[in-house]
Image 1 (cartoon, each protein chain N blue to C red):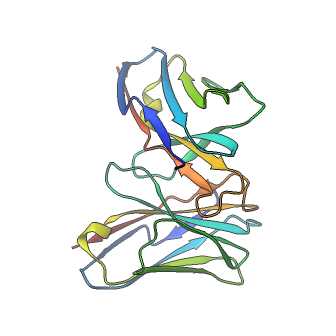
Image 2: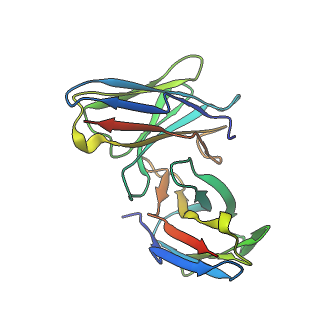
Length: 112
Length: 114
């Protein structure tokens, strides 16, 4: 158990809908990362937050947004969902913006 | 462009045999390199982390090497076990990288069979 908690574990929704994925980082970790992993693909970096502020942005679609709250948990919002958004979404956390990241177990999103 | 390339894409070996996975990167300036193991449908778990000055690091039956001059790393697994079946991902962190702090390879999918 990495100490990073993601909810829900599974999510099935229809195209055009909006969902929110939640991540609780390890105790004491200030940095949160979000990644997308499509079937048989590598992990794609979406966005990173550090202590509530956006730190780095990767290949994140405009339909997607994220935030990190004062208690350091983070949410990833996915809207106007398309079939191609079906993937595993991982959250990772680290103590600082440059130390090792520990991954959660992921949220499997299926868009039908 | 910062990239991490891994080979082979997939590998099947018999239980008890050794294998070596390769990682080539173009990430610059280099900060560190990590190997992760990812079981199917689970989050990646760190195996080793190597900085510029480290050539070899072991973690049980896993030994990682790093050649910072040629920008290559390898992960050697000895006496493989069925539980080693997973994807192995090479991840390179760039120093002062701006928008891409971590660059991921696509992984090598290892299957260990009895």
